[in-house]
Image (cartoon, rainbow, N blue to C red; front, side):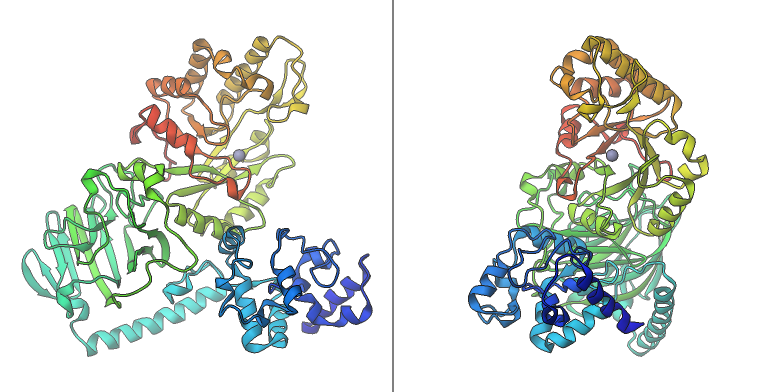
Length: 613
Ligand SMILES: [Zn+2]
């Protein structure tokens, strides 16, 4: 069976319409691209839609249209970039690494470079053996979305094999930890609690109490370190872990445990820099790593914050001391109780690279997100569409890098990605473990009758737009598509049809958010402000309010306008931010939505949150 797979590839290639000379076809090496792809595992190649990049065939068809690698290799007589001695690594080669490709590889956790490195070190045969065995087109750098740099801090999928592995690993680690703690008493044990020295790695703090780590090295004053503890808190607890702090626990970064005063942010939030809103347990493993300018927070081994502090961070006056330097580690409890079991505190070398080599920090001097984070305004993109061929894990990684949470929407309805209850169940089972919100986008008007209430409730929330409806002559209309819009009455009358269908859907359909709201036929968009009269706005706002439906502020269509948002705010309608991106590149930083938040003076109290929050 094992040989079967590679043979099959050859057979397929032989029967495809792009006939190659036989000798070439049997030569596995022809399946390797100049840049380190294994085309033999690429469906575009094996189905004959792409001829690869060898010989006279055009450059590969899979998104590398402006390839600079092939001309360079041909000119220099290289079989692959592994033959090039100009650079120690392809990392330094500009032709090999345009930004778009780096981004794509980062998103999909793949690396052509690793392929080239393997060919250089182990030869083509071994590279081919790996690629045919794994059926990889390009080397995958992560089996799940594990960050290799952080060693064993795995994000583990709920698959059986990895679960077993994890359990075994955990038992082993526990065994080691017990031995270690017995043998070298002290490392995590030296704490000062309310001014008194306490020699224990386990302690409980009540409201008003604090604990500061004394350490064995440098009085507990660290720059780079790795910290692990198990924490459990009472329901009402407001606590935090401070890092790079001082004896008063005022400077440095604060990581929330429990609930802050706004009662919206959740455990693991890097306060006012990376605020989190997804639910968190009251008892969990907390890990914090500082390496260079990077802060990583993990809850139960899942990365929840991955922040890169830029050279010029943006900080509001109240948070001016919220910066990396070096300092003490401590807990502070404002309310409730907090139990702590320290499992590891390891100082790391002072001189580590500021950033991982494949990532750059956000330019906070020109970024709206950090400004809103700094005043604890909830930045969540509830309307993200993710490329179906990329796993949702990659969406989560991108949201970590962007610095705000994502709700991933999937189209549900006739002819859409999910068409019945069974498919929804499978989708949810496959993706529930990924720390993103999962949204149902009800499509057409029929979706209401296709899915049961139980199915809808498997999602974190449900939304719909009213771009599809039966017009005044009963024709199926799609407002986004000009060829499916029939305006054979005066535009002002047509506007009444749109409003009527919208209000009707808001009354009849069980949704949490009305998305792509107030969009008109494209011929009418120019006069959007004119068509949305005060009277029509009032009708829309009333329908939203009566049915407790939030209004999306949509970044793609730049709607609704400030007048509609202000009218909604005045009536107590809640808001949700959403991009409704067309592709991943379009997943920007919610520009229009954030601009409207500022312009209309929205606060956390104006914002909608999922019920399970
Ligand atoms: Zn959408």
